Amino acid sequence: MHVFSAVRALSSILGISVALFCGRARAEPAQPWGGAAVGDWSGGGQALLITDLSRCEPRAALSEMVLKRQCWKLIPYRMTSGDEGKMVWAPPEGGAPEVSLPLAVEGWHAIFVGVFSATEVPTTAWLRLDTDPAPVPRYNKRADYGNSEEVFFRTAHLRKDSRLCFSAQTTGEVAACGITHVKLIPLSDQEVARIEDERRDTTYRTLAATNDGFSDMFHRSPRTAAALLAQVEIFRDTDFGTLILHAPGADKVNYPSDVGYPKGSHAEAYPRVGDRHFVASVRALAGQEINPFKAAIDRAHEIGMKAHVGIRPAGWSFFEPYTDYWESPFFREHPEWRCEDRDGTPVTRMSWAVPEVRAHMIALLREMVQFGADGANLVFTRGYPLVLYEPPARRLFQEEHGVDPRDIPESDARITAFRSDVVTAFFKELRAMLDEEQKRRGDGKRLALSAMVNGTAQDDLFYGVDLRRLAAEKLVDEVFTEHGFGATTYTVNLDFLREVCAPAGIPFSPGIYHSGTRYAAELPKLFGHGARGLAVFDAEIEDTFEWFLISRFGHVEETEWRLKNLNLKKPPRTVHGFQRLGDQVRDGRYGPHWGG
Image 1: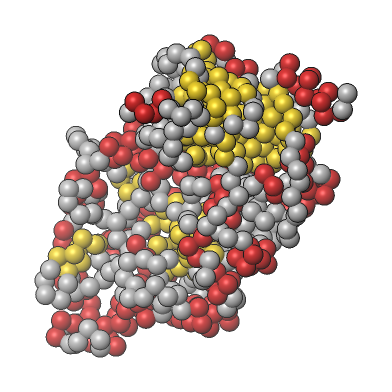
Image 2: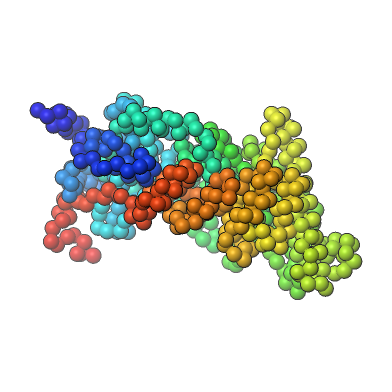
């Protein structure tokens, strides 16, 4: 008997099969899609295929062909490839618990998971090995009448008793979850050596990721430590080296605070369903004494990342009908400290010309930094204006210049200089606080003061953020950019950033959003001009190929090769159709979907 025939015969007894494929010609570099495609791995032709998911445990959480609450439905299938097995499927509101599948192999493998999708029930799957502290998400959103895409999970050195765990999205925006099979590709010695070398090499970890402290709780409503840490776990073994954790708007927080306001905590009703999800998440975690900021900081450190905590200075209020959910007591109790435009129009900001406002924000940053952060971040792209023509600002300006600022053109250099004085005063006060905290820790490590700006030079200066001045006075340690509010152009002035930052030894990272392929034409330019790396705003996983492209952007030469040689709009997906699913024939002339 041929060796592979013998392996197939033995494996079928265990509900496992070996998939044999003709190897394709390899491209350079070794992983054209960062490992996200089956063909990226040399051992694809010797993959072990586990198709019988009735082997998942606990067995009480499985239901044969019947939908039940707190159960996964077992559905037999035969794919057009000829592979047969039993998939597990959890309905969106079923509350199915986590189940685990024994993998029964040893050594290094690339792990792919067959993720099911059908019209109106796409899959959100949460995957982890039994030794992982938190799961990571994988999706199949293909809208047809039933398919399974082989989605890359991760590489790992497996033990004989390793188990792969599956969870459905059961809180927040609940979703269906279907898993058809697991494919385990053995890695070559060269592949293992490359993986181990890269995990030791920190020079590629030049990417920064922001987290707004709100959206994950709004959409997913995590209510356990593992669910919460999933938003950080996605950065493990990637090129992300800095996590920027934002408070969810000005003095709003997502934990019980002595300074800030847990957004929506006093609401009787919620403007959006997700706002209720956020509050439920905050309350559930607080009830377990889990602080989302501290937990994220600790996990970031465990996987080798720095963590900066930040505020969005503009987030005092929001547009109706969100105000009573959004606004903090500090904002509501002090209307006299709010910004005012030249014509007297009230502006929903708190003025940095008011010492009490600055002190309030620095007290909040002190509280957040003391959770163990490596620095503080000011998110000016979600923060302008900081000071306008409100009475406290007018008094200060008139004392200095002898004229009401409303009586001179806004283009007058004295107005720009005054705004810069106010903002720089805040930076000095914040720097002093960070120095005090550094001294308290006693470890000699400088706590960084970083800023996220529009990076166009003139737009930030107009609002008082004078990067030249801040660099000259050694008040900023790192600069990130975002195409944010207050920008008159979305073109980052890379020459300006290099001119200002390079002589002072200040690393700067131009910003992109979490869809990497949309920046294919811009990336070569962004990699130049002396930038340290890239800042990814709201970094998250939406598509596996997209994620494993963007999460390796720290490998500049490799990324440039991909941009030149790959069609980023057509990743090499492995998608299977079905001949049978349950008791139904799916590839006949008259499919069951005709009835709908």
